[in-house]
Picture (spheres, rainbow, N blue to C red):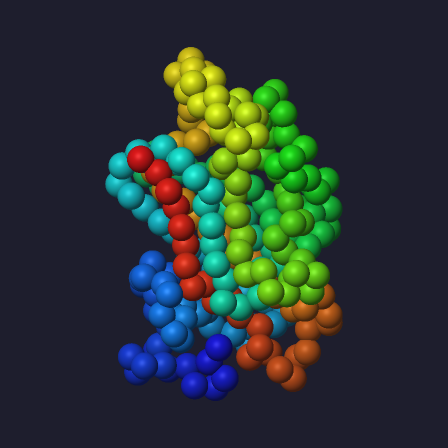
Length: 211
């Protein structure tokens, strides 16, 4: 983290967006970092948009790795028309009812008949429970497993469904992806207004696998 040493005008101290997509494995880790929550209680809202200018069929989980604490509220959105319109993919919150008036669910609650349901999950937002887990996922493979089996041995069944069911095929297809960060990690405590520089978003890696 910056520890009062961030400076967008100095290469060694800057954390620009491109650092979310560089090669990881270096020491120290590179990452993008937002501004701090200096305007609290006004929401710290950040959108990150990924555009491919072509159609992508997702083949594996979307994985975001946070260098900061994982956000307490976030929405993952997709577009199928190059960013003209957007639909939610999944909601994330420490308290789904409070944040989005949605009952909390996990991908394990889904069935073949409810696979296309948009859910809110609390699995990736409770940093005070899993403080060393920095990843947030949109689980593609778990959804595939509803047709292909838990070990994905029956991919022919999945491909058959994708070939014949347009809504299902469209669900796993994107042209653009948008990450809407709505509330940074606070450690499930009251926001300390004397130390607002500790609240921000930082992402070291974004993985999107497709074809």
